[in-house]
Amino acid sequence: MSKYIFVTGGVVSSVGKGVAVASIGTILKSRGISVSVMKLDPYLNVDPGTMSPYQHGEVFVTQDGAETDLDLGNYERFIDINLTQNSNITSGQIYSSVIAKERRGDFLGGTIQVVPHVTNEIKTRFKKLAETSKADVILIEVGGTVGDIEGLPFLEAIRQMRKDAGKDNVLYIHVTLLPYLQASQELKTKPTQHSVNELRRIGIQPDVIICRSDYPIPANIQDKISLFCDVDKEAVIPLETVSTVYEVPLVLEEHGIGKLIIERLSLSPQHDDLTEWRGMINRLKQPHEPVKICLVGKYVELTDSYYSVRESLKHAALFHDRELQLSWVQSEQLDKISDLEGCLRDAQGIIVPGGFGDRGIEGMINTVRYARERNIPYLGLCLGMQVMVIEFARQALKSNQPNSTEFNPKTQYPVIDIMLEQKTVATKGGTMRLGNYPCKLVPGTLAAKAYGVETIQERHRHRFELNNSYRQMLQEKGLVLSGLSPDGNLVEISEVKGHPWMLGCQFHPEFGSRPNRPHPLFRDFIGAAKNVLREGAQPALPLTT
Image 1: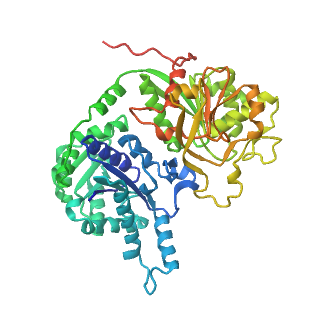
Image 2: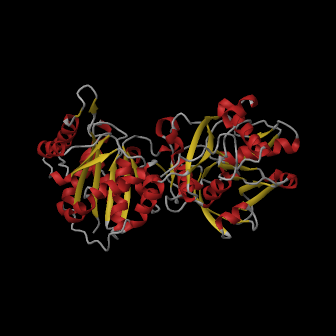
């Protein structure tokens, strides 16, 4: 039987529950304990696929095609596992399922209520993940904060699990913020006390409290929390803000959370080895020569919109012993060609990530032209490949008319067009080309050199593709179609002949990168960029003694 760890949050949102969950998973896996993870999101959307990145941040896509919360990306990166659609549950999914059962007649004669019908549906999802994953431990993060009205059914469900799974098989961890008052120059525990009191009012007594703080937490503060929240002192875990989220597993381990979980849940560790992780952190903290990358996107005001892209660039930079210096440029700023030099002049590499809609597209196309004409390494992801093809077609045809039918349905040259099977799709949610699809690589290309294999599997999230009607013309002009679907019908990767390193892919390689194993395309992109000399790009490292 799987054991369960439930992680809740208090005081404020964005306190770091997702990273804490991912870190706990890393610690357990380092002991040979198998782990699977789930995120509970209280919103009524069925999934985040139709939500604006400004509201939700990045939509993370699993291999089986689920559009999920970005925390699943952290789980996968830290623990190095591939999750499925079973790992992200929303209130929308739960209520839709319960109502569908009621309409079908499953509850004839009964009054449908939050308890027990909604809570039973939630617990069914917990048990399904346990059965399908066969993991020793199921880590479950409850989104939002204690006291949010929309999260109450989830909290009631996890309370009931103490009885369903047995109290010895369930552990509750609460993550709270210790705010620092500058006026009195002290950390305050009262918000944590109130948060725990609210959790206890619901019927959940936390076994462990992780205390987030921007300042060191003295022993007397831990004693106070232990006393007022009725938690053992060793179970009050300080988590001070660190320079990189990848250090969190080591901080939690140092404060004994791994040993505590093992003892409380009576787990049987096989070994205890965070050596590789410690080595990565040591390398990360060493001074490195910088590599300057410019990300040109539509949603750069909220950098979480490109969370996995940013992390993938960090992984690749570390692989090359470089420090990533990432500049964020709103693509609308580059609609005028005169603005390009000011924004991009010191970039050693340029990346254009995914997105939807026509806002800022001309700025992206101008960015591609800038990278192509100046031989600056370029990596285009999904939309980034499409604008690369549009720009290439414009210079090949010597016309500004080539475009995507997404941006101009009446374009004279629709070099990017909606996929045939998408033309009859009427609904928006979960209807794109989603999840893993195979791709065959053309020998001798940048893509083939990066991957080192003939066939790959990558995660997709799109409706538009390169229009096959223009394939021959574009190839004749120098566009290299370096990755194709196995039937040869879809162009998945394209490159520009004669350019040192210019590649666009229709999929999202950022979802497959890991801290100790960067994705091949990001790795080779940074490898090309680090050798590019631009004005101000590579200041001398500080002298060390």
